Image 1 (tube, one colour):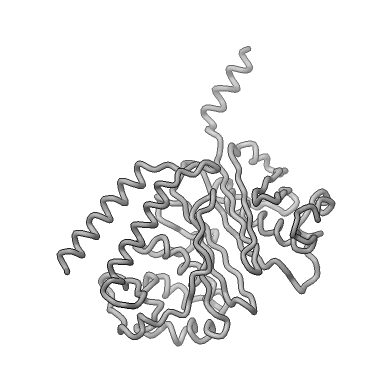
Image 2 (cartoon, rainbow, N blue to C red):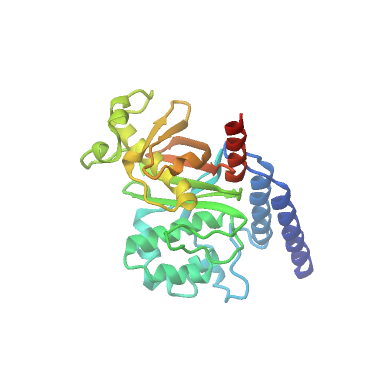
Length: 328
């Protein structure tokens, strides 16, 4: 069994490297071989471990102390969805509201026998325990649990100076989270093979709110006037949908331009078919560098899920084209 495990993992590593190098994904034109093969490989690695038990057990981290089997079998979180979106692979996980406080408290996860250690990197658990509040700790852990369904073996996925997940260099990634009374805490991760000068973003928002409308704060006058034109979506719901789309677009462009963008600097337009467009009005003029922009949305239970991808123009090529045009 040990020799067989070694051979399987070696083949997984070699095939993974080949798939990543040979596959290409571009915003709006998804080459599905690369991401799907990668996720299948992760599933193969998990399936190999699962074959050692009749239960759904994910592998613990190598070179770390193995938690007791009865703790590994305890899995209070569930996969809410696993979607292949135009912008990449997107997975959402949740933990029931009644379990979250007890299951993810500092006192609970401090134990080496806690189930979280079988799924997350030790540095991720350590980072979570350093968070100042129960909510930030819980959402960090849920976001990493979602990402780990696609990146089961990699270094720690922490945060960069801007709060973005620092996924491995071969990938583009984004994380979102939300807490609801009905569904507990939701963690969402979006992952795609890295494309030069590109960024991806994901956001999940509740489709309803008991608070005062945020329309005037997050939407432009044009957007407010356009509300109510999507079949099956009320005006109040559409405010939250457009807010979610803006968040996804902002996450996609921030790694590329690294600057603050106000809500009034972008106008999004969701369509009934699940696509979305955006009209930029960035004060910095950075949007002139955007080559392709894609956005999509869908309703999942009580949530709106939004995703976006942005790719920059080839500035060297653009300068050559401009010079040729000027000479003519």
